[in-house]
Image (cartoon, rainbow, N blue to C red; front, top):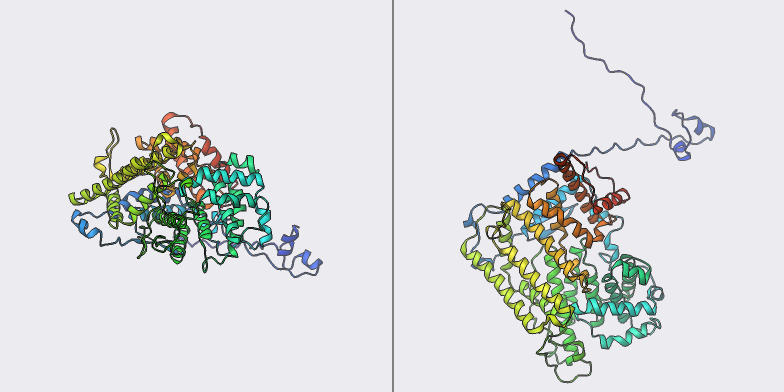
Length: 614
């Protein structure tokens, strides 16, 4: 009986690579060593290194499994036993343990459990989709004002004249600042600044370096408050391009001030406006860190101490109060957006809140303290923001309570009565404080600023209630409420709130400010859920919402930055899933929405590697 012998390997001649000289000259190589071309030219014949093996795409089933694991991870975040929850008495003494998030070798800390879970899942999705890390984006938004403030452009003061807008553009930007930025900050006194605006139209040579820095920060934040259509009509370029120009001028002027060692109030005001202008998804952590630097600068200026105690003039006292409370509020806001609990005011702080005064009520030569108005004023938005910042910073138990509210939405935990009572008290305190401010300082019939204030107050109250209200009390008719559904619904409701605000406020001139607070990571989580959720009322709500989001956030269609590329890849992945499901139901391929067509076009011209979305 014959025995089977193992097959002998076939000896195929190895195909030699072309030489580097032939490849460089783009001529045919006979693949000998040395080749005939190299012999002819008496050149060294060096074979080209073999091409890197093609990276095999990871199976899409892995992405599907990762998405399906999301709810499991979220359920695991919540304690199974209600007795493990801390008592309301211990909440104020026991800070959240928090979590370290590792991102491309860098470590970040967060003490928001929901933020940590969402961020973990987003990183896993990026890895599976082979999306590059944001630190390597070719046109990172940090170029517009992010992490390079300590390394400004290598320009001289003379170059600032080239960046200075024309006189007509200066007046246009100044008016935009007065209409769209100043009512939300009130850190400048326009009547006092007006002469410098006029002087700048004749050149910058006669202005101090600190005033020049302030002017460029005004130009920058003003141009970002414009729409692209408005910017093209006045400057012949997009808002982003114009911002690059003005922020380069700001940094060039700032470079000569040595602001970390010596800083005056004018320079500090320019830093506040700079912080306000760089609030975008890729700068969240940088803004929080730099706001901390600004807090230290403010302390060195003594802004945390009230001017009355320091014997300062009424005007200087009032302007210092506005600067201190603005940077404090920005620090609180940036902490929350970065996934951290806000810090309390520094020890020894006794700076009073600014008075209820219009710009016309104060002047530099005043010798007697200003008397607050008893009627509505221009300070209404600032008072609302100050109160929210103060409330968050002075409520050490709030992050714990909100985290347990998050836990109740992502697990099966039942909150005890004392914790629910604490939640209700927190919501009631916020609502009472904001209602008092609105009743005292606002009158919606007096103009767009007070209409804006009404919407802001309503939005704050709604979001606070949604965060801390147990899921079973939020059940909607026809929508099954499971822990997974509730978290998905929270993400949808958050985006719906934003779109509603956009729609109501689109004609007020303050839309830029609201859009800067859009919670992109929560929205990306929503899109990730749509990659595997294919039916139900919540899914339909989410898909009906997407065109509205892209209508207002046209910057999401620009895939030149990593965060927008990541979002675009997820949206296209989700649409592939939905299109397949609709085809199986209807028998016809659904028409691509407009934003899908634009994303596909952008993906084909994106500077990032192609992602297989099939």
